[in-house]
Image 1 (tube, rainbow, N blue to C red):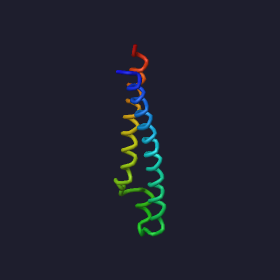
Image 2: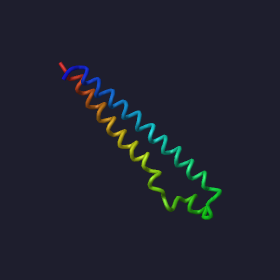
Image 3: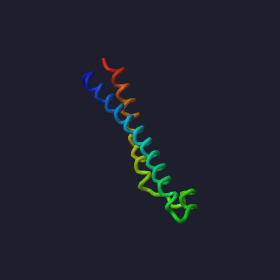
Image 4: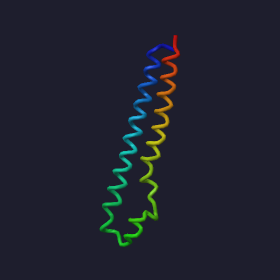
Length: 87
């Protein structure tokens, strides 16, 4: 493989890492916005405060962010190892 191939792996790893961070931050923002917006309109305030009935679709950004972080870190490690061990 050429040196450019290793750089592409590193760039892809960086992009996945950046996307993972953005997804996790987006999840926090969406959760806060969702639970704060319905606080005044919901009859059962206890459910909102304790999050008894968790909304699974709110965790989709967090799960995707974690997967993206893992993929990004693995790509960065592989790309770095290949770059430093190439002749």
